[in-house]
Structures are given as C-alpha cells and as structure tokens.
Image (cartoon, rainbow, N blue to C red; front, side):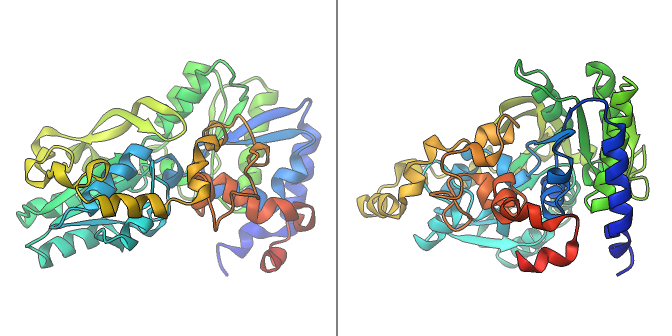
Amino acid sequence: MKYLDEFRDRQKCQFLLERILANCSRKWTIMEVCGGQTHGLLKFGIEEALRDRIEMIHGPGCPVCVTSTTAIDRAIEFAFQTDTLLVCFGDMLRVPGSSISLAQAKTLGAHVMTVYSPLDAVKIALKESNKKIVFMAVGFETTVPATAVAILQAVKHQLANFFVLLSHVRVAPAMEYILQQGDCRIDGFLAAGHVCTIMGTQECTELSERYQVPIAVTGFEPLDLLVGIEQCVMLLEKRKSAVSNSYSRVVLDSGNERAKECMREVFEVSDQDWRGLGLVPRGGYRLREKYESFNADSATAIHDASCRITGLDSKAMQQKLSDRMTVVQKDAINCRSGDVLMGRIKPQACPHFGKECTPQTPCGAPMVSSEGACAAYFQYARHESDLALDPEKESKL
C-alpha cells in the first residue's frame, strides 16, 4: 500500500533504531503528546527496543481522555431534557462522568446520537426543527476547524435550534503546563503531526525557546516515529533547543492558513479544564461574542434546571442511576488516570490496570479511548517482546 508500507519497512526501521542507540551518550526522557504516537510506539515495539537508552513518557495526547468530567456531566444533563438531542462522536459514549457515561444515560432514556462530523449535527438540526440539537465539540486543534465550519453553516441557515457544548483543547499550553510542574523530568518532546498540520510549528518554536527544550514534529508510522526520536536525540546530544520538522511531507511551518482563519473567526483562546491536568491557562477555546448564541452553556433557550442529572425529579430515575453504577465506577476515585495523563506513571503502575480496569470495564478515560495510553498498554505491552518492529505480527494480538 503506497505511503503506508514504505513507512513500515523493517530494515529501515532497524537501521534507524541502531543509529539512535549508538548516538545516545546517556539515557534521555522524551514525551510524546499524541495518543496515536503512543499506540505506534507500543504496537511496533519501539518503546521496548529503546528502553535502555530512551524512556518514552506518554502525555495527555488523547482528546477523549482529557475531556473533563464536568463536560461529560453537562452533556448528560442536556441529553435528559425532553426536547433536546445530544449529538457527539462515538468515542465519547463510554467516557465516565462523575456517576455514569453517555452510553449508560442512553439506556436510561437520555437522547444521544453519534455522528462522524459536526456538519452532521447541523443537518440534524435542519431536519429536526422542533428539537434543540446540542453538539458536544471535543478534540485538539485538528477538530476545531470543523466545529467552526459547522457554526458558520448554522449562521448561514439561520438555525435557532443548534448549539455547541464546547470542550476543545490546545496542545501547546498543555505541554507548557507539564513543563512547569516541579516533578517534570522531560528532556524533549515529540509533537503531534496532525496538530501541527493545522497550527504549523510556531507554537512549538516559542515553547522550545522559552523552556530550552528540543521538540521534534513527527507522524505516527514506525519510520516517522524513529526519525522524530532521532532528531530529538540529535538536538539533545548537541544541547540545542530547537524544533525539527520531521513530518515535512504533511506539516508546513505556517500550518493550514484557511483552517486557522476559520478558527480565528469563530473562536478565541481561553482557559480550559483538562481531565487529569486541571485548569490549563489558555488551554482551550471559547466562542467569540458574535457567536455566543450557539453556546449551549449560555443560551437561555436551552436551559431547563429541572432536568439536570444532579437534580432529577423522579426518585425512580435516581434509583436507576444508582443501580447502573458498576463496582468499577464506584471505585473510580482510586483510578490513577490523572498521573498517567501527566506522564508521572506508566499504566501498569496503577493497581487497577488489567484487573478491575480493562477496556470492557474501564475505570478511567485512558482505558476507554482507543487512543488512550492504558488501552495501548493493555493491547500491546503484554506482547511487546514479540513485536520487534514487525507489523505482520499485529494480527496475532
């Protein structure tokens, strides 16, 4: 397959791997901030192959994992309103809120529908004019332009029943937040190639200069990851703080100007609550004042306090909510997903990992999401000694 097999070439991967190991004068600690990269590092055995000279730390690189509990609870509140339909991406369904998930809320009668694009939510609002349509907008800068386009389409169609529950996050401020922590031991970063495809490399450059840390922008296939790691190691060995664009076939230094223009039109930067991190300064987006009428949290037309999940009138419904909470969810306060998202521990260090906490019975968001670090370790780490950069062995997992 063109442009896939080429980036999984075993001999080239082995050559790069040996060169990286040979050029390390000491053990370095590098954080990748993209969940797709985490899965690639584990799936192809790269983390295991490098572990004697490089420790890979897995950051908060999964948008599903970092969507706050408050945002999930708010979405459930809207979904229980009689004339409201909560629309979201499918990977949000099983993410736990403070008591239940959207999937569990749906079994209790909440109005939840999944879509592949924010524009699908606009189409639903056009067809269901008698309902209030709330789209749960989550994700990094990669999905923000699509939400902006959806809002602009709602303006074009003069929709009064379309709203967004906004929980978009910005990656560079989260990287900065982690660097500011007293226990941070990161020597360098692998930056997410898909985010930089939209935003360009300027934010990474500013971060690198401010904190004197090298950053390699890279992709997700084995060769991409190894090239990015090698570039990061070269900068570390030379004691240089700079940005290396190791994904230039996709990422331009200027990013995608049309996408950024659309984002700037609809959104402005704001502080944002991240699951596992807390309030990250300038870590997200909010609607500009001219588009505030589409904000589900402030639009008076959509508020119905009696339907809030924290104050449902029906005692029977409250009992159902209690009954639906599994033992794992009741124990979720002991889940160490926050430490996993901050890169403080590897998933296996959590006492629930692989026991009470599995993809079928997840305690926290990193085990729910297909891009979560806990899910990646559960799927691949137990077999990492067998992978050895051989993609043909994927089917045996």
